[in-house]
Every structure is written in structure tokens, then in C-alpha cells.
Amino acid sequence: MIAAHVPVQRPPDAKLLVLAADGAIAHAPRSALPDFLRQGDLVVANDAATLPASLRGVHVRTGAAIEVRLAGRRSLEPDALRRCVAVVFGDGDFRTRTENRPLPPPLAAGDRLALGALTASVERLLGHPRLILLRFHGTIADVWAGIARYGRPIQYAHVPSPLALWDVWTPIAGPPVAFEPPSAGFVLDWQTLGALRGRGVAFVTLTHAAGISSTGDEALDARLPFDEPYFIPATTVRAIGCARARGARVVAVGTTVVRALEHAASHGIGVRAGPGLATQRIGAETLLRVVDAIVSGTHEPGSSHYDLLRAFADDAALRDADAALDAHGYRTHEFGDSVLIERQARHRAGLPLPAHALAA
Image (tube, rainbow, N blue to C red; front, side, top):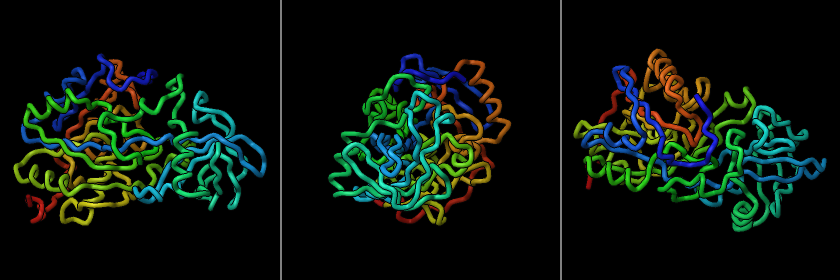
């Protein structure tokens, strides 16, 4: 596949590969996504807005230049931003491939970091030279103001020009809680939502704090995704219950939606409304309880995003899809093309319908 290098969320030539439950593959313009959904289906999207989560600064003890990428938080509460999991790089910026970025100077608990007008400390190391629990100093208002003023969107070398914040906000963006964009949602615009409604397809949202997608280190990437908080409204839970009662499909826009919904249903009695912290990794052995199909970007084998797709289709079907993506020149990464993957029958776990799901 070709790396998408222009930060355009909805290019007119964007493509869609559809992998059906029986393994059949179809190609279409991405604008035709509503045509592949059925009357009664429920589409669930992530409404998280993206923070400017890359902060350049100095490791005070050594004077060395660093870049800090915020990568994880424990809840969606605004005050939770005071303490973040972060990935720290040495000098450089996004123009260097993440895999080639130098390590930061040796970090130790108590080290101070100067990040624009913000100051922070290394609260503790998290088992890797790049991974820390970071604590910002000052009031939470200072933290938010400093991130807004000095932060930049997290960016990778395949996009050569600096990203603006509006490049990484989906059209439905709401609470600013994501560290990287829930980029599957770039497929959405108001015309698409209107087309879904015209086909009798319902649409609801949840909020999931999408984390970092790559650290540049194989061992650290193996720990992705980090724990990610989410919030599922009661209206979304009721819509899921109604969809299941009428035999319709739940279609997730993005891996973050799958992770939130499946975690919220992991207790086995239906999707639970309210806040949660997704701690699980979804892969080939996962039996899906809620989601029947996923709209996603194109992902490379070996990544945590690709592993999640293995919960929907077996490796043979995904290999066929990968070959078709290559043969037809699909673009990968966040500004690339899209896939719609229907869940194969063997990937479904039984889930009883909760009595409250049909409540008005």
C-alpha cells in the first residue's frame, strides 16, 4: 500500500474495500459507504476531538532537547490531564521516521521537563527508556492553556508538512480527549450522515480517548494500545439494544469504538453505559459480543490496529484483502483509504439482551 502523505480527510478519490462475511471482496468509492449498509443498521462513531499532544522542550538536568508525546490518561475528566503516560524522544521532529528517532537522555524519577511555558516532572519510569508517567506542575487551567499554546498534533514522517489542529479533528469532534485522531471518522461528513439517515441507518456516538499509534520501538509498540478511557451515553446503549432486538447490525467506525463497546460488554450482560477504562487487547482469539462490522483505515500486519481486525475475519480472508489493497493502490495511514469488514460467524460470542436496553 501507498502511504497517504496529504492531510486531506475526505479526498474525492478516496476508495473503500468491502470484505464481506463470506470472504467476498468489493471495491467502491468511499462516498458509497452508505450503499453497503442495511436498513436498520446502527453506526457508532467516536466523537473525541484531538489534543495537540506533542510538546517540544528541554530535559532540565542535562539541557538536552526532547519531544514529549502524551499517550495515555486514566479518565476523561479534565483534571486527569495533569498526569499522563508519555513517550519521550530525543532531539528531532516528525520529519525523521519514528523508528529512527533517538532515545531521550537517561530519564529518572524526579527529573524536570521544561515544555514551552509548562513544567513537568517524571513521576516514574514505566519499564522502557522512552515511557514515563508525567506529572504537570501548576493548575489544571495552566496545563490546558499550555498544551493549547505550545502543543502540536502528533505527527509521523509520511506527512511532510506540519499538521494543523483542524487537520486532525473529525467533523463530529466534541470533547478534546484524544491524543491522536480517531481517524476512521474522517470518512464521515454531513452528506454521508444524511445518506445514512435516508437509508434508514441509525447513528450514535461515544467518546473514547484514542491513544498513540506508534512509538518507533518494536518492544514498546508490542504494549499498544495503552489503557484508554471512554464514555458511552445511555442513548447509545439503548440504540444498541434496539438494533439487536430487530436483528440489525452494529457497525463501528474505528478500532476505538470496537474497543470501548467490547470492554463495556465484557461483564456479559449487555453494554454498560457510563465511563470505563479499556484495558484489553482485541485480536484473533477475541469473541466479539457487540460489534458486527467495522469501518477502518487500512492497517499494516503486526500493528495493534491490524490485530483488532483479526477479531472480525480470519487470517486467510485478511491476506486476500491485503493483496487486493496492494493491487488496487490503496493508501494507508490516517489520511488514507478505508475498509468495511463484516464479522465472520465464528467470531461472534453470545450476549443476552439486557432488559433495560429497550427502555425509552
